[in-house]
Image (cartoon, helix red, strand yellow):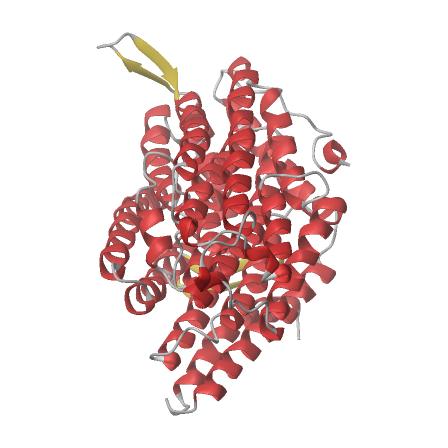
Length: 526
């Protein structure tokens, strides 16, 4: 099979698997679960071929397929992966089978529909990261809404309908504005090809760039979510079933940050330097300053909100607001080190926070409560689960030797070079993260075992160990051997960085742009 056909097969294999599930009777529950898991596992194994066949040192997309789709408007079935999207595809295919396997015990109703929705969702997520045509990207982006809405609204908690509608409305509003911006780009540049648009959009005036950037950025900022557009996230996480929370935190939020680095920033870099005047209070600042400040606020606000939670799942949800603020800060550094760290932190957050939601779900299956006060001292009853929870917690707070440390350190280093005060304030989020996560672990797992309902807790089952062991392994692999990832990622990161700075130089304000560090990236953390 050629490389291009391999990528197409990777995108649509889950769809074929979902159709196969539809052909099975609803009462064959074990077969439904097993087939869904096998399809997602085959998808992961197939995606590993992308990693091993990916040519290190190449900045552009590989495994490219480019066929006519809607000739009347120039839309094409144009797919490919570069060093940035490669690892987001791998993250998707790694997380999905773990989420499906982790749901075997608690999904009791409409199992057939649930696993079909999970597989269709996986196909759409892979498509988002592979699409190199704006209209194709938009189709995959919108296709995600339906299965995720159903996963929250049908299999969620008591307030699932409220959470699902809120998620749908927030995302839909931003997406519609992005669609209008896509149409404007097409009529202005005459193409929907992402690679062609990088150069074709240089004809835009500063005012056009600001408007188009704002439309794209709103859609992506909602998905991240950035402060103050984050309010849908805690509700969606708390009400979603465990698998939904894992996919939401592990992959869907990365679509927002991916959108910034793939589209919003390189398409309209001049918008970042555009001066915004607020005459009423006499303020003047750039869009870059505005988004950087919002990223720092999100880091600190998310951490403080997590510190105030009594519900473990909601605490982890607010931690995502804080961690994704770090990712945005790295991307907004506009240098190779910051952007590379931001991309790496996307992967770290997907692994660590996805694992935390899996672990919280396992606790909930045993006690049917997420309130911290209902636990305490359970480490002596479930030592294996407690040990894994502690490892994942340490990775989440960035302990050296784990994946979280590499990403956060690289982001802060990249941002310090261009905006020291942003890095200093953001560093407080690292401290607060350690406080709320370790305090939660202390209250849940350690201390006296005072609640008699916790006396009969069972430790991790074989199925749960199959879910958790690969996550623990990848936490340490990413923490100890980051260059395995940075070597393949770095050329694409540098290409995007150079493209942004090239456009900024064309704007006539080179002094306003942060300097490029050609050597930043793998060497910066190696």
